[in-house]
Amino acid sequence: MRNRHPSFNLVLLSLILLPSLALAQRGGAGFGGRGRPSAAPSTEPFDAHDFNGIWWRTGGTREFNTQKGGEPQLTAEGKKRFDANKPGYGPRAVPPALGNDPLGDCNPDGLPRILMFNRPVEFIQQPRRLIQFFQYHRVLREVWMDGRKLPDNPDTPRWYGYSVGHWEGDILVVDSYGFDDRQWLDNLGYPYSDQMRLQERYRRTDHDHIEMVVTVTDPKYYAKPWVSQTKTWQLLKDPSEYSAPDWGGLIEELCAPIDEVDQFNKRIRNPAGGVSEK
Image (cartoon, rainbow, N blue to C red):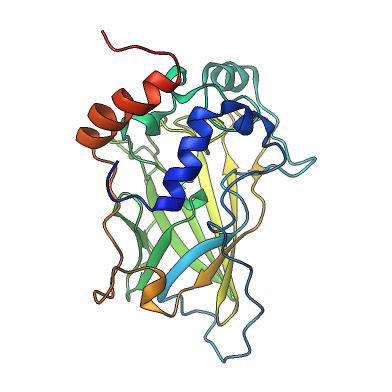
């Protein structure tokens, strides 16, 4: 697996080679910003409507919501789909070689899963749209801010849906629809259907931090809307925190099938799970 950070490799290998560790990680295990400590609130002046910059999802876990009492209410159809998903992480973890996580074959993260992942994201505000440029998988997401409405019946479902945004005071509200339902909500295997509507609410709390809450409304799989735990983004001011030396830009971090499937899965993941190549 190329273009991965050493700390990420160690975590991933521990989950593959020692699945009991994954099983023990109840109550919201995940990267805490890959070990980054929470920063104190900033006293620098800021514009609450200005999100430009490179941010890191440092606060909150990689799961959608693991707070006690925050579990979703699945419909019968949603429960059937959830039970069929076999994650390599969390309380239902199986060895990844025996699981069916779509990421294991380099499929796109989709939304909201990519928002749960702790990697740098550049926010680029333009007059008609907000762009989120994710380091992980080099994903470019457009949030249209020009007053357009979401399509009622999109003819082409998308891994990252169709997104529009507007301001409610100092809160940026992003609504999305039209998703490809082959991905999961998070790494615990919670599903979503083609009926899912997603809403993200962002609030810049000080110069260096943004809080985000995500709500999933999916009557096909969930009996009522499911609200995430609050996630926190931290502003990265020093290029050394996110860039290769002397470059000053996000690194390329791709999941390339030629590396992931042909190299990592066959040489490491599958043998660790007792799956032999024929």
